[in-house]
Structures are given as C-alpha cells and as structure tokens.
Amino acid sequence: DFERSRVYNNLGLAYRKRCEYENSLRSYELSLRVKTMGGDTLGQARTWNNIVVLHGEQGATDKAIEAATRAAELFASVFAWRDAGNAWLTVARLYEGQRDYTNANTGLLAAIDAYERAHADGEVQRVKDEFAARRRTKHSKAATVFFMAAAIISLPLGTRFCGRSTAA
Image (tube, rainbow, N blue to C red; front, side, top):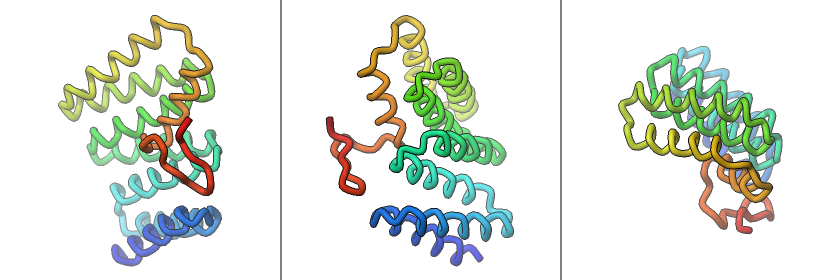
C-alpha cells in the first residue's frame, strides 16, 4: 500500500506540472485514501501539502487554506512540529493574501507554538519578528501581493506554472 500511495502522489505531482489539475487532484485523493486506510498520518499530511500547492497555483485560496490547515493538524497529531509550523505559516500567508489579518495572526501564533515545540529557535524568532512587523505597519497592496505569492509554499521568484510566472 505504501508503494501504491507513493505512485498516486507522484502521479499527482506529474499531472500538476503538466497543468492537468483535475487529474492531479484525483491522484492526490487516491493517495490520501490509501494512506488513510494504511494509517499513514505523516504521509497524509505531506499529500495535503501537495494539495495546498495545487490549489494555490489555481488561485483557489479558500481551498488552499483548508488543505494547509488539514496538513498542519495532521503534522501536529504525529508531533512533526517543524512541519506543522511550516503549514501554519502557509495558512497565515494565505489569509494575509485575503487581507484577513485576524486569521493571519492566528496562523502566525500557531506557527510560533509549533516551532517552539520543535525547538526551532531560528524559525520562532523569524515568525515573531514577522508578527511584530505586521502589528506595527499597515498592510499595503504590494505587501499583500508579496505574502500571497510567498504563500504558494515559498516558490522561488520566477517559478513558472501553467504559462504564468511568479516574477513581478
């Protein structure tokens, strides 16, 4: 079952790279089904992370937030705190892109908590600094665009997907 779930997950990645989003999502869902039946919680969380990227590339922010939240919860349930922190940070950035600063701040606080549990001091300080900066400044349109772009799982600037580029 592990190999079968990995095949489905890899198919999802390949379809996503070809911009075949429906096939990609279908493959990820099959991977999740096999991982759920096999009790592979960490594998489920990783597949949810892939689904975040898929929805992010399509501009489906609400679905990306749901997937990132699910990933964060699953990572936390198996004490994968650094991964949970990364997922909560993604949730925060996605909410930031929607100008929902209350939920963005909640996501940042959840990320800080997870990073503290992971004893990831560098990440804790980085997110605390980001949280403090958000509280001190008004959010400009440019900042919102930046955080939305950064939310797509921190893709490098210039990454292309389906004919579009993340470059400004």
